[in-house]
Length: 149
Image (tube, rainbow, N blue to C red; front, side, top):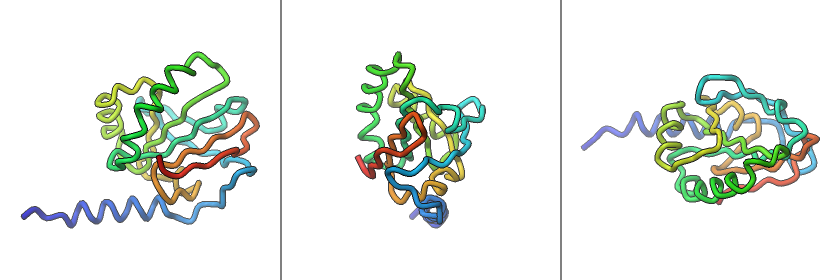
């Protein structure tokens, strides 16, 4: 029988980071700024996208609902990718860039995917479940929050 204690510990740490004590976010409030990295290691700040409608999506590859919704997100991206006023920021919360690269390849994802290996942005947003999607208006105000698929 395999020893699953390491896997259990890793999962517990990820849940702790995700369920942290982030600030209260709510519809109508300003979205807090954060920094994550793209797959090339370049920093990406939420504030870089001020003036755009932002689809902010938190996910992990072990999340079955996350996996189920990616084909629809990809389809939406294909429809909206030429709209300069819209951006998808899809943040993997708590896994390495290698997980994200493998996932992106497996699902044929074309939109940029971001990495937050220590789930700091998810903690900042007090994310309690994955997937979680926020819609942020061009002024940086949260207009919708959706937990689950």
